[in-house]
Every structure is written in C-alpha cells, then in structure tokens.
Length: 217
Image (cartoon, rainbow, N blue to C red):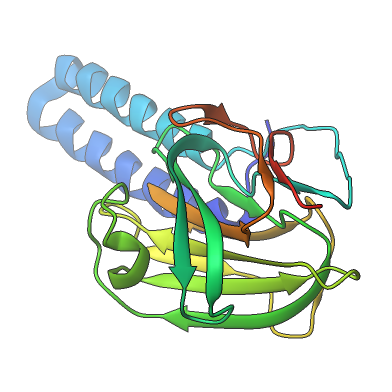
C-alpha cells in the first residue's frame, strides 16, 4: 500500500510519539501495560495508514463527463445561485467525505483553471449546508475548451483542519489528475451548468475518478 506524501510527516510523528508512550507505559505498568499500549498504538497507526492510502485506479477520461473529484456520499443535489465566481444558476452536487474515505481530490474535468481562492473560516460539521460558505475552503473554477465551466470547492469539516490545494489560476487541469488533499473529514461541492444531465442520486456512494456525476451537453 502506497502512502500519500501528505501523510508521511504525520505518520512519522505519530510513530515516534507512540513508541515513547509505549516505553513509558512499560516502565510504569510492566509487560501487561506494554501489550495494551502496543495494541492501541497499532490500531491508531493502521487508521493513519488507511486514511492516507493512495488507491490504485484506472484513469478514465471523457471531455463531456464530470467525474467525482473525491470519494464519499452524495448529500446534496439542487439548483442554486453560485455567487463567488460563476454568478449564475447552477446545479450543485455535494459529496461528504468521512474519515474512512480516501481524501485525495482530483480534477473533475479538463481545461484551464480560471480561478483559485482560499477562504479562511469555521469548522462546522461538513454535512451542514452552511459549511459551504462559512467553513475554511478553497474554490477552483475550470473552463473546458468548448467554454463550459465547472466550479468545485474543497471544504474543511469539523475534524478537517487543513486543506491542501496544488492548483493555481491559469494552470492546465487534466481530468482525474490529483489536485489536492483534505485532512480528516470534509466535503466537496461541485457546481455544473444548469442544463447538465445528473447521473447520481442522493445518498449514493461515489468513487473519485471513477463515478460520473453528470454529463455537460
């Protein structure tokens, strides 16, 4: 299993701290205490390894399709007014990422990055509707070669305390290429043209780079 680069430092620090704790428990509580501490430490390290895993997936591309930018569950499908950059009516598809999901983010379409902006904010529960505009977040807008625009937003949740975004304005977005990471529970909102054909349903589990969210005509 390959570990994402965002997890290397966290894993190293956690391992060092847990070894120190186990040694201290062994000195204070003996062998039985060491066994218990080691078991708990191993479980915690396995959780970290699983969270920062990099999945092996076949890359799929299709210029008309909007692929899911993350793993998770669809929690919102609705028509909204996007006011940060597109300033038009859009279809919003929101995906909640639990701590058990892969937390890598990928580009849902190919094109040119028109807009990228980080917003500091709160850490409300990621499934709360207000988290889309109040939580710490990064917004990215991409324009396809035919002029169609898709905006998506990385949103920090209650447990997520760091959003990592590798893209910047005027970058070239390659569909289903990695563009960021959100650490420990979060949400991604995707805003697509109003006339798009949505291909997912509420509460459906989606897989980043694999599940088609919608088709833009």
